[in-house]
Length: 122
Image (cartoon, rainbow, N blue to C red; front, side):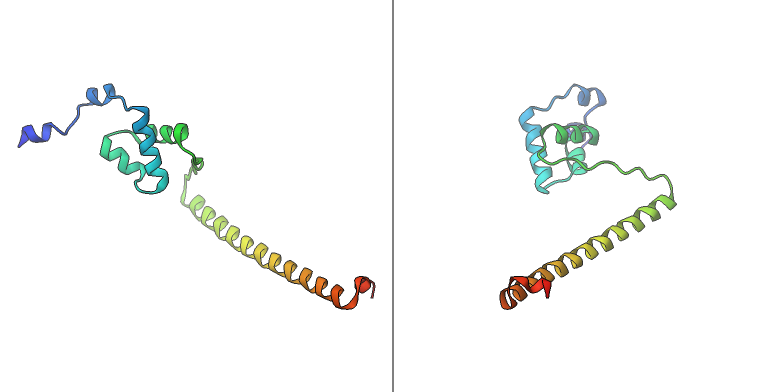
């Protein structure tokens, strides 16, 4: 049994000497970007550091990696949640205002069609 397990456990030196082909790296990047597998899963499956996989994503990926958010305290987490909530609220407000503008422009166009082009002067 121990010999069987040793076949699947790589030493640190073996991992350092390993090289992945460009095709393999591109394949893993495509799988990650399509959502079929995650970075941590690839890391565990092939015993590769997540930083290396992220480097593959930057080099071969079609999507830009999101910037890291460094959180150092509970207050910052609360502030981040508060800012995200405010952002959602503002986006909803902008959406409502956009709908109102489209509605008002439609009313003005309809009024001009029925009352003539000099509608706004009246």
